[in-house]
Image (tube, rainbow, N blue to C red; front, side, top):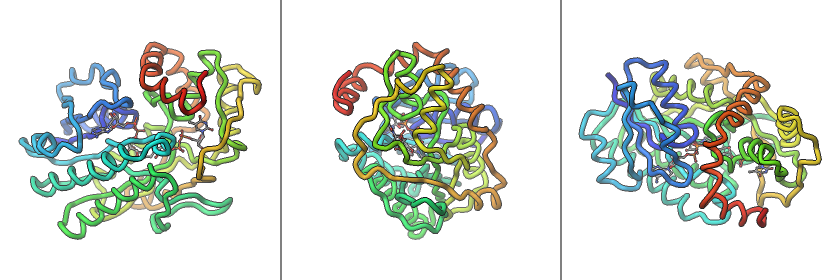
Length: 336
Ligand code: NAD
Ligand code: TDX
């Protein structure tokens, strides 16, 4: 059995990754590790320990002794999803972003180096490349030009990972993916926020002119790409991952409204996000050529499936759309 540590396992992509890896990698034993911040939810991993190939450990990636304890048994691989992930929150306050995204990554890298492993994967984002004009796509050679405290902290972590590979021969790989959607996504991100607002009969807050472009990928496709990188990625390399599905936020909003049988009156135009990146688009040719991965879920099917998941899992999103989240939402949108 290959023992794989999955940090940030109780979040959106981490929990989808654990589920997908249990389905497709019979020789992996997964250890989920998560601090359970506002974005982490053990419910996202419900039932998985019954497989006998998954266990959950509650802990912070900034806590070096706790991370060291994960290495008490031999570790084959570590994939780091743990992060503060919401751009708007990073505008309100960057401290937690620097602490977890950079400081936490440094702790993971040091423990991985001390104890040894076969592969370390840093799950990063296309946002480290900054913003595109109307033409072109990000390649792995695009310069890093982050525009938000969130993306700056992710870029800082990417550079640390590279330095541990160069300096300490740590077998580390970085991935940079575009915008994910699918089940278990926290309803602060645009797709689940808009779906759940509409299910509650509330309007959806569309930033600025709504013409910013994102390249959407279903979380299952992202997880399959990450499994191939963990299994076969070359240390020292960066792999871009994208869905080849560019949409303006207006087009995305209309698709969600259509799925739920609502009209344009449900759109509320709100002020723009500061330094709002205009366009992201990923060239994923390298991972296609070198690791044989390409996205499979078509957007219309994936979105319909996702809307259905939120309709069927109302208890899940009602529980997370309260408490601390509500306070933040009121700060962001002026109370509703
Ligand atoms: P998420 O916010 O849903 O989950 C993050 C998880 O990390 C949560 O479970 C949280 O409890 C945990 N966490 C936070 N701080 C921690 C700490 N100090 N120690 C341990 N655990 C901690 O985020 P997500 O959307 O699942 O993103 C996962 C990763 O993928 C992030 O690194 C993010 O930058 C990256 N990414 C996300 C997207 C996207 O579209 N969502 C796209 C590209 C890359
Ligand atoms: O209420 C909203 N209204 C709106 O118009 C929100 C929350 C967002 N938006 C717009 C801003 C963006 O152009 O929708 C687009 C997507 O916004 P987010 O869901 O906040 O995602 P984004 O900022 O693109 O970042 C996401 O993708 C890359 C994730 O949150 C990151 O963690 C990931 O790295």
